[in-house]
Image (cartoon, rainbow, N blue to C red; front, side, top):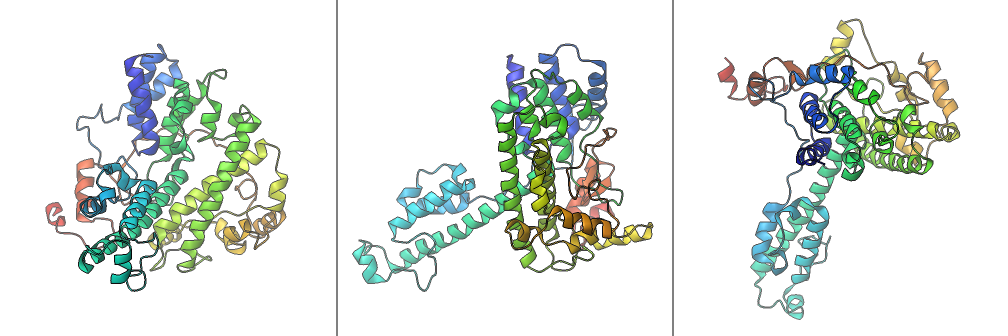
Length: 454
């Protein structure tokens, strides 16, 4: 393996957890193929040329206003820096510990032992030690003021740990909803075959694209470039198990052994359980309007839609694996329904003005039991019930994905990635940056930077 290949494959693997533009991932793929593949077939060469024409490397400005990372939670580095000055056990902690919940919890527990504080007991009135208790533990030399200072810090660190865990979970759910299990794919599995790595990286980049403000539906991830990369795979050497993490179609799953299919089935069911818990917690904050699914004041629409996207991805892939394993009888007994995303009121109005209305799935979703109740066994949702509700509301259950995995449609034409500001397309990346700084399209009052636009 050449030094360039050793550089390109890790860079492509790193992109699985990022939001690089598909054009820029295609540029890396072109570089990789020149190193490993020699001459490309005409279809792949044309597809990559069309995509890379607008890569940042080939644009005169080489700039995009879009962040190339999923938003990461702010870690506890600041808290650990303060702890290092107050607790002996915290002096040797690396900076990365602030982003790692396991290391952070261990640091909090170790620091707590120094002042006799039990992890999780942080009530300032009931859980602090009095003078006599501190003396028993050999803490008499620490003044009450210094003890309270340390106790408060650990209390804040425990709250920060909970926030980091929650935000990391939200980030993971968002990534799963966009590109399946791509971000969990080990490097060794990803990089075993360059053609496999290229297809996975490009399809993931397409899946990770941001949603547009539109009534025409979001763009399908599987485009003509992805199709060209898929069809050039060597059936004998392609990493079909790796591909099944992001593209579990019948064509792929038939090339995966039963053990691997069972492993993926278990992973997706575990994700269903996790996402269902997240959806339930959001639901309990204030039940949504199931009849319309239009955002109302106070709704956490971003959190709900991220979780709904992950549910849809996990549910569809779980269905696909059940079908590939000949286990459709499971769905005859338990067939949890879809979870619909919330729609902004202005988008709903746009639908009505253009002759549309509620999505046909809305009435089905409103009538079926809530999915988390189904998974816990508190409500029954067999396949026959889903079919009955679908047909009563004029929806074909199989074709619409209510009772079986959707079939991959034909590859869509490649489209240049637009610069988006709150989902609205802006022609120029510099202007998009200015709009975002000014708060344009945000639904809030414009910030002072808006004067620059005028």
